[in-house]
Image (cartoon, rainbow, N blue to C red; front, side):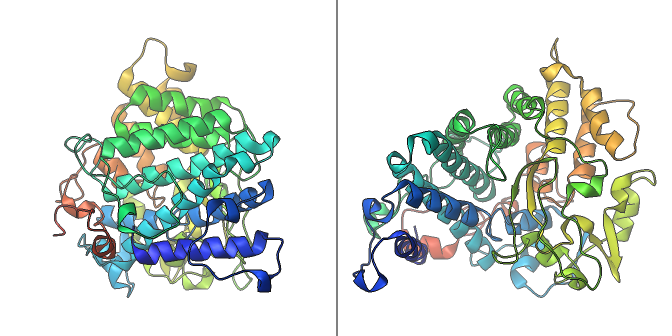
Length: 460
């Protein structure tokens, strides 16, 4: 772990202790480390730390949008026209990330900050009131498991690229980091080990979480993340079963119109208002005018609607990709250039898991497995028809190729394209799907601080 990252953790712990302590500020002695039992002493303290963990998970540098944006850029061939001045994102567009890329650095730091937050909660779980204990632990493990899954597929090779049991992933940290010392510097665990840890966390989270939990993680949120993880692994029976659990819960429904699945754009000239979750949001990061802004909007949104207007969507790509009858063709807006309307609200929530994705996962898994009795009792054609009918389209066949093509139409610009290319072994233009340029470098500042970390191939 880098020293700058640890310092941030120490500062966060200090801030939390000041907020939660019953002492007056002047009575608090200055310290350079925080003991767990002093920082989180009551159930209220731990519950407050859990809210902080959600906040860090939803940072614009993590589930708030930027990692998804960077992977979209890496997977782009002709859909996104980049006019930005950020050299770090230009590197992503050009498939030439550097090990000193600050955007990549921030993704690593944000992911491990969320993990450390979750570790603090889990370590203090005995302080939580009995009636809340299972839920709080489940939420913390959802955060940790989801963060590890995201980090390993960004900073490690794809699960199907070589041997996951020997390919380096990311360090696994399961206890709070409170003191900086060389003994705390960890090596990279294997890709398989990180996936195993994420599965363990998300499985336990699904068992402990309630079916409904406001806009916080639920049983279905954990199942949805497991479905995505298992799909990335190529474990289609487990992925289909997990997706089916989300669908079968009956707690989520596709919105009537496709664009309604995303935060409503403000009227031109009027301030943006925070967007609420939609009926198909299995899990979404909450954004308010006080906590920050939608990280997708920062670059995908036009300047009229709070963004920088740097990432323009090619009209030629839109016309070539969506048929005239496809309602998803209307999920773009013209503000001198074309932009995706999915992220036209700078304070709109960031959809992380949508119900439509679960239908497509179940359809794909049933198409690949062709079981005698389809998972969930629905054929791939039936699941594909659910998604396509919402877009105003009919469905006649549900081949694997058609289902994968539907994912591109339905999930465009939501951060899926690179990971789908890797798991289906689809090249990015002339770049092989398993090229080292499509894997994030381990930040150089992390390697400088931790001699046990090794760099990814191609970034020596």
